Image (cartoon, rainbow, N blue to C red; front, side, top):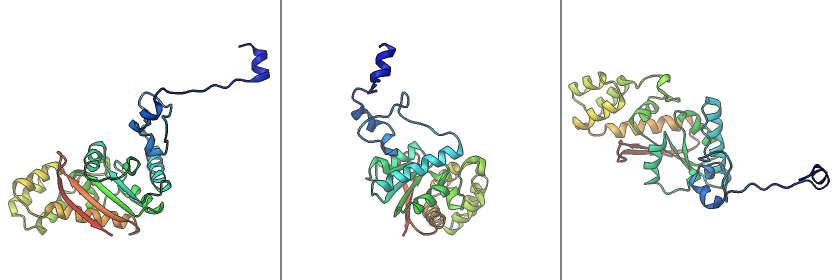
Length: 228
C-alpha cells in the first residue's frame, strides 16, 4: 500500500482468532472479565504474575470481576489442585474461583472490602494449619507449620501422649495428617477447620461469612466448618 493512500485514507487492521469465542472459556479470561472471545496474550491466554505486587493486583482484579457480575460468593483456593477438588463439590461460575496462593489474609480482606457476602476457603493441611494459627501469608518463607500449635489441637481431642510426641517431632503438616489418621484421633481435622475459619473471619473484620474446607491429597473432604 502506497504512502499516499495511507496518508489520505488510513488503514484499519482487524486481529482475530478463529473459534476465539469457543477457545476463550478454556483460558483464564472469564476470571478477569473477558467474555465472548479470547485475548491475544500468548500461547495459553494466561498471564502469571510473579511479583508480590502483581499477584496482589491480580487477586484484586479477580474479586472485582466477581463483584461486577453481581455475584457475592467466591471460592478461594491455595492452588490449582485444591481448586479442582473445590469445583467438584461447589457449584459456582468459573469467575468465582480464585487461586489466592499464600495470600490468605490479604485476599479475604479484599473480599470483604469489595462487598462480597461469603467466601469458601479450600486447601490442604499445610496451608490451613498456618491459617488456623493466625498466619496471613502462608508461604514457607514466612515460617514453618507450628507443630506445638497442632499438638495443642490434638490435646483438645484427647490424643495420647505418644501421639503428641510424634506430632511435635513431625517435619511437615502432611506428616501430622498421617499421624492423626493412623492413631485415629477423632475431631482433630474439625479443630483445624474451626480455627482456620475463626482466623479468616477475623481477617475480614467479621464482614463476610466464611466456610473452610480441608481436603486430603486425593480430594476427600476431611472437615468443613463455617462462620456467618
